Amino acid sequence: MNQISRRSFLQTTGLAAAALAAPRWTWAKPEGANSDIRVAVVGFRGRGASHISGFRGLPGVRVVALCDVDAKVLAKGVADFEKKQQKVAAYTDIRKLLESKEIDVISTATPNHWHALATVWACQAGKDVYVEKPVSHNVWEGRQAVKAAEKYQRIVQAGMQCRSSPGIRAGIEFLHKGGLGKILISRGLCYKRRDSIGKTTGPQPIPEGLDYDLWCGPAPNDPPRRNGKQGSVHYDWHWIWATGNGDLGNQGIHQMDLCRWALGAGELSPRVMSLGGRFGYDDDGETPNTQIAFHDYAGAPLIFEVRGLPEKTGAKNMDKFLGAGVGCIIHCEHGYMVIPDYSKAIAYDKDGKVLQEFKPGKAKKAASGAGGAASGVVMDFQEDSNHFGNFIKAVRSRKVSDLNGPLTEGHLSSALCHTPNVSYRLGQRAAPGAILDQIKGCRDMAETFGRFKEHLAANGVNIDETKAVLGPMLTMDTKTELVVGNEAANALVKEKQRAPFVVPDEV
Image (cartoon, rainbow, N blue to C red; front, side, top):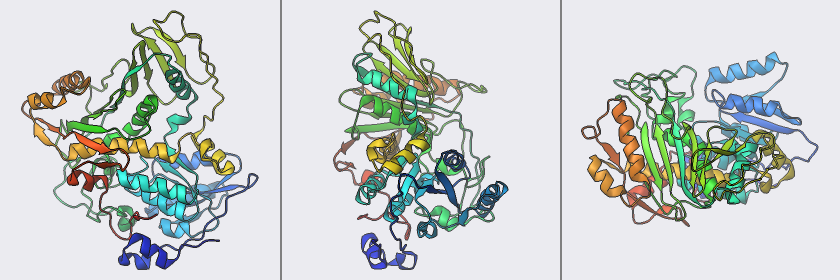
């Protein structure tokens, strides 16, 4: 067996400070088709709990270890297994877990800033990986994770479960076969209510039982300043740049992935910009709660909208656009397709008449004479509909091609969330007139910005006075995945990490 030595680790990271913490791992051998797959779940206070239940329900799969930096969460997780007369190993530090030869798969649902590093380390340790979305916290480390998976021949599934939805898969296939003609715009929506996380006057205490140094990992070890409803640390990290990516990288990554999938785009957009702000309240959050991202693909633009405020002041409902709130709308020359949730896709003609609905089961035959739209198409839904199960299938076959959500796809879609945020973070507040001047050459952005203003006005926000942040248009080198001629932007494409929690330059 090959072994990653202490000297090799130091050479690849280039960080002598990491010496005492350098992992020493022995590669695990791939499990045979008839062997149990042994899974460790890392980070399970929130989404990770679904990982546990998802893997426990699969034949030939055993959850054998849990890892969490919160002692209370870890103890409860172990106790839940004991109630079912099942024993699991408990770890606080993922590096210790990766030393175990009794684990084949790492399934991780940590905060975003840990995703890529956990993936790289697990690949180096010979483990296969199921990693939650987004698969990275910045563009560069996502590509490094892809390189690690390829180098160590690991099976890595990105947690974008829509790719295992039979209905959505059939709908995308319908589009790719020309069912509605040429795609004109791929539009993503994340209209999801996000309340204020509160305003604090200084550093907050570290929650009892939390190993905060490990929780911070690659991020700066600064005292927590979060004071939201869901806890000072355990959820509000989404809205802090050092650990989260706002709703683009939280909820929006699902819809961003669907939008890119529909376009068939296999690389980053050549130009990208973003505008928005954190409107309606003053709190400790840093990421925008109202945002437009523009990806200037040659074939058709990808436009993404984030709204965290309700449809109007005091309302409980959220806005919808063509019937969708959290979803996608693919505008085509002969109609449009709406993907309103995680399970189905609906094709409409230009007049809004339903042509075909794709959902679990057999699709109904499309209406004939749909203005040039394909008719009579019936899709076969014999696809892997369980994202965890699809991952295990690929772990057994050792074929990346068996994955519905391979890491490369997860990286590209995650990066499409990161690059607009880079533009936003480099932006300046601008009046609506200046914004319109910059976006006038961007297809359909003026219409989108008009609805943006109306939405804010309905929530009592006058951007003539408050102004929105207008980010620069960035030109991407789609091969290197760097911004052309912009050092400030590239400092965000590849963020500085804190030793010893560093994704190495050479994986």
